[in-house]
Image 1 (cartoon, rainbow, N blue to C red):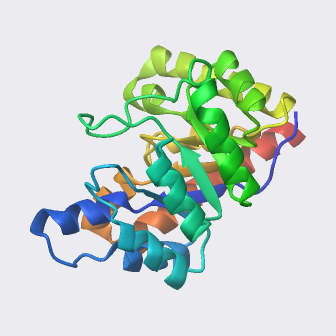
Image 2: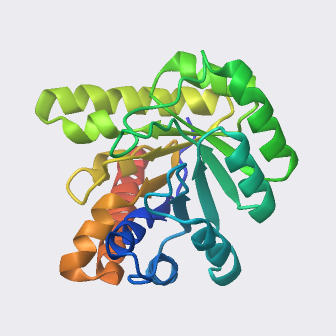
Length: 253
């Protein structure tokens, strides 16, 4: 098992746009949030352009690409419209996620097994354009194998269940993520984790040596109300780095 020293942090700015859209104006500006997050230690910016444009808008994506130096991870449903937008803006990465109009947030992972025929041309088009494709999936061996069959180089494991549980049940879910991350590496996939991570639960996930990136948004934007975005990102960055350093020190010992 390879233990990667650098753990990247992707900051999702969707819910800065949610606050903006509640009043219909231009503030707070999610692009400003992206710049602040990058300056505070984020390695990339994540933004989900939903079909109903409930938070991020098309012009936000354009401005992020034009004004923000950090790589953009463009979260998208596997639709013709979103493929066209991705090919127009050419983000560093595109994470394909399941999307239902009625959900408040993404409720689970993509079914890459059943969706193979639908997903294959999407993955191919994005990859051919030089966009790093990831699939947002559950920590499940069959889904990982499906990602390989589709030719996606990256997977992001859905941490929602881990984040919602406590005690022994959470430990079981963490073990599933650890096992899936190790299997992803054996399959040649780069492994990311996201959804529901907070100051209180991030350390055990950050300590997983085969995970290369964490994507965190809603919690950081909520915390920014009290401490500021710069402070929230810096604290998350520190917690991640300390957990990774401690785990590597333990392995070395």
